Length: 223
Image (tube, rainbow, N blue to C red; front, side, top):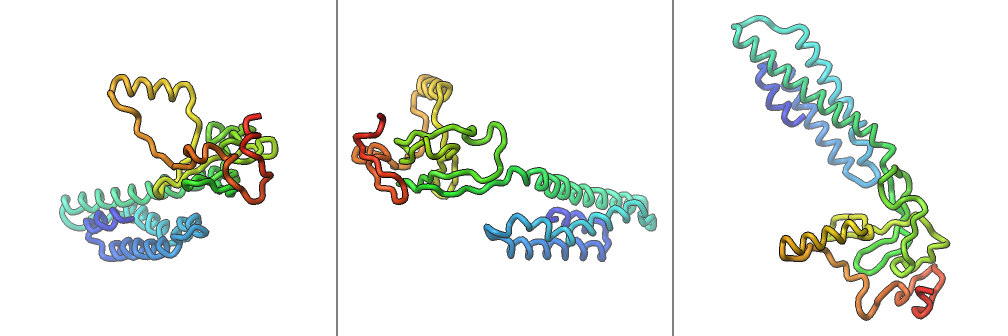
């Protein structure tokens, strides 16, 4: 609705301008109030009464154009109405429709364990699709998670990297080949972000103490 507020002014239709601007301000107000973890999913649904009627009104105006005035004025009026309805329809199809299609992919994460360095062992709830995340049944080494893989499958590692939540995957042969290629051609190592989860003093999860899990002595890891 933001760009439409400027384009609609070219129509010289004060009523339409007031409706579009008012709809935009109302949508901004609702969006700001819904900017919460538990409410943001419903923001587009609640702003439909402000957005869709405007699109219908502009479409009706295009079908019944005002032919009074010079040819140039009528042409500018039609172009402005057409651009406005195009923006509004883009908002509906790209915003509302894709939101509905993406609903099945929405997921949440249940934190199973918290590791040092703002790394979390989590379990995905919903939003599972082929090729997304760790495949079902994949086990992450207990040396990393501190959890017996026989008792927990389909776990995922998330990291809070300076405010950016990323999912961690183990490097495969193709990743290592790329790192070697990069070093040979760029003459520098691939940049990476270090979480500091493990170090020389704490080499794996066996050195950590987890509450609520079966304790395993470091000497027993890897057996």
